Image (cartoon, rainbow, N blue to C red; front, side, top):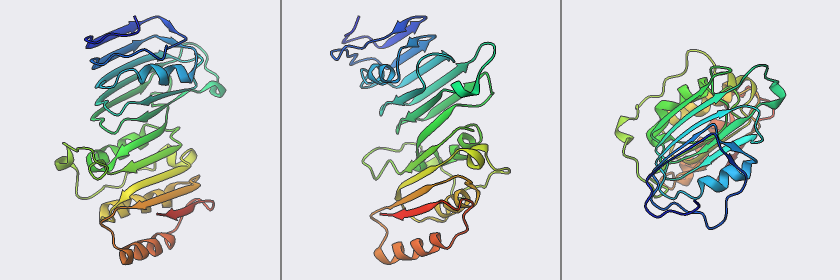
Length: 250
């Protein structure tokens, strides 16, 4: 069954997916559960998820040790994501697997790694207009996070139904998240507006990101040239935990 026009809910369990035909499409599917489904490659995962143009809810329950090294979830319409990652018996750290999440419409995220008790998320796109409250939680539970991309969904043409719930002041974590100490290497901020809250986040990342190699700031159109120059000078003068950290501005 590779195409279905009216199916809304699909639950796949204990199967193997080694090929996804280019004609596969589930135009009406909104809820998908992948329970102990074995994928033969990273590309197979990406190809399957691209077949659900209006997918809103995704549940992934997978075991370690399969061929997929990076489980990429790139679904623009996704609103709810639950991930369970389990490892049976001895687990060699060299065989670590991870997740990449690119879901700008995401409202609910639940990730549990039953081996470590933390997530194996390695790359994250996060809307800071509606999800900045999540930043501390995600950083604290993502010890392997290597790439962080922050953006403003509203200015990109999207909607932000939860913007009224965003705090006006970002609160610094009580302890430095593990990912800042050992794994985070790249940070990108798209449509940076220069609010005090945003400045506090940038300063915190620079001061505590031991291995950050690049931090790129893309200014919002509301920022004047004079303001850009002022912000750039301010950031360049901030102390950095990583000597290799390079700042770039666009």
